[in-house]
View 1 (cartoon, rainbow, N blue to C red):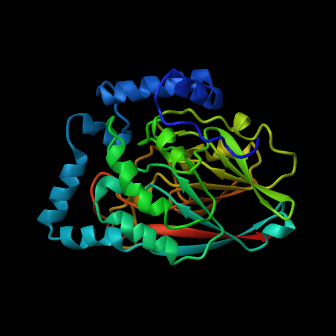
View 2 (cartoon, rainbow, N blue to C red):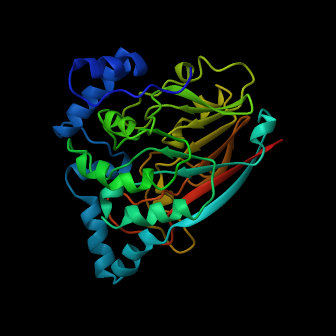
Length: 323
């Protein structure tokens, strides 16, 4: 499979036919049904403690606690303190022409959480030399039908670099956002793969749909057209699918979703997580699952409440080396 074709903006049923061809009729129907139920408040995305959000607004409770303990001002300012984290990976299948390739990884922008955040993220991109950009889902904080405000806020981020860009959808993202992204030259991978070419060699960027709430990921389809032995970088919104991904022999998996807890105790110990049963080391940073290496971003934005405590947001520069 080559570069993903750019579909037109939504105007008629053919647009959904295009998505059906890419995601598959069954998974598209599953996603659309979950979207509709969530929008109608018939279902909720929370797990564990977050199930109580059906009755108690945990985000408002968290903000009240921060204000009551006089931590709100500092915690809110922390969302703009974006750290650039550099990681070096040694990959056996890396083509020679991609030695030293610099892949800039953003995740969980939730860009509508604060109207000033997008310019800070754009500045972080410009200040970090890179060869390509990947974004592992959750572009917005709201999960209602109106994606327009988030689409406007994200434009400065997409315009901050001329490098190739690839993204996937997260559990906060509706499938209709694909039209807006791809009309702005930002391909979204829906269980698909796209090659980056250098000197006749290819590095494959593979992206699966959300494995957390929508559960519309399909690793087999995503790498179906990739040659045996080719180097594959997997984008998967949540690290909770790492065991299944490792069985499909990806070289490196990049994820987010956890925010590493976002509001943490001193030393970075998380209090709650948005995913049930996930253990260290998959909550943040580097990890390994079988023969597959992986990384979970702390997130570039903040979710629910515009605050971070003892857990800085990050953009991650992944430098690729031949093993």
